[in-house]
Image (tube, rainbow, N blue to C red; front, side, top):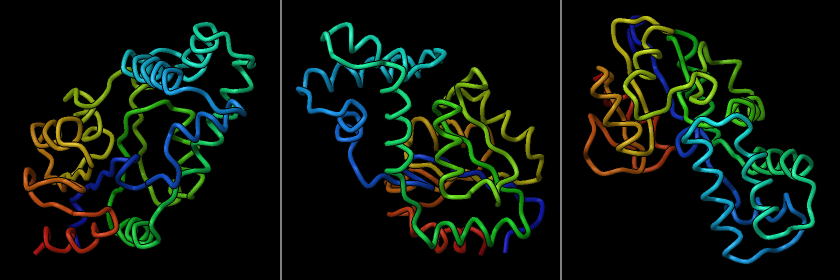
Length: 214
């Protein structure tokens, strides 16, 4: 096992959790009817732009803007709550990954470091009871800083002080590259060999972690 001086951080979306439905279907479920690809593209652009700019209530603002742009017959507030619920219920965690987090938490400091909306990301974590095994959760928007900014990785190290830090994520530019610059050992999920180690699938993380400590 890792030494107690090691703090282990996981990315959330695409690493600890995956999705059983695509986001277009989630959006349509929230609205209650099908929409054109143009509406989907506009909504997605608005949402991502709001999140990246660390806007308050990014989901609500994106839905409200989409309603106005396409004259949709929806209540933005109700659609926002429906969307968040649909997104959360669409998430899944591989059993072996949850078991990995649980086992690691017995002897190590465990954290989640993720971009996203505070309310939404916390609901995903709670949906799968991951908070029971995690010592620290850092979500970009409530902190006012996003990956790949090195500052959020330095914050992660401050929140869980340790001799060694490990970070696991599924994007090179937002996860692996900045984490390495901040002094983390890294495991790249579903990526090429651009990290200390690579896990082809999230469910392979346990095996790769064993290799890292050998």
